Image (tube, rainbow, N blue to C red; front, side, top):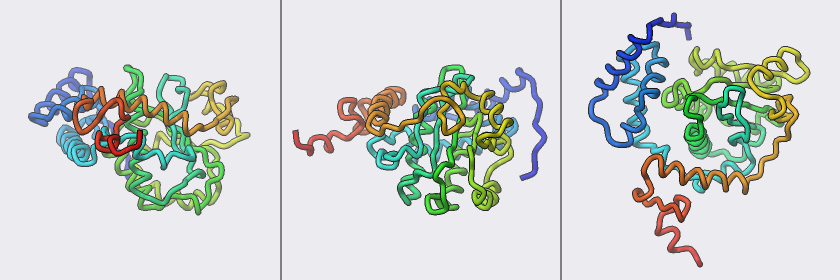
Length: 285
């Protein structure tokens, strides 16, 4: 948990490192090759302080995880039940830098399934990345603690597993994390969880409280208050409509399939919203 001194290297050295990392990976499958864009390689090098060997090992571990977990093949209908309460959703606004915003409301936790919670979040991470503007590689998280209790909290193990996946398989994807109005007893939970968070991520975490001048100024620096929901000190209204959100995700599933060239493979069919043909054939007309 000790902070490492950042390695300062110029643009030419960075470009050389990216090329060396590309060469070190060797031949890649079509999906892995698509995943390993130049910006992707830079993110992994940045996450490992431009240490080529560490970045290679990290990226190879991600490629292995993606080949087994297949996050790009998760479809909304598989995880929709996890999102019924709106515990995690993509906001209908962006932050001041045009980045995608994910809103999390742990007080609306509705299941105890560790795997279900993880797949739901991984799906939304992939979706948020898909919807990032071309010039952006990162997103923002807003976490609303209204209604959060020990009873609605996910387990320490699930939290640790989520942190592991985010840090090791989605490096440098989080620009800003705001924990808004956490209750005092959250401190005990945080004291345990924070030891699983690396220093780069830790420095992006911001605590904010209502009726606090510093918190208000910080939120204004990250977000337009006209778009920001009132739950976070803004002027907008946050209303989660599960059916409407499901329609949006169904449309994005088609975009995902096209991006990963899955239209004619893995049983994906645009007309069936990601369900296999056998699933649709068994449904009543």
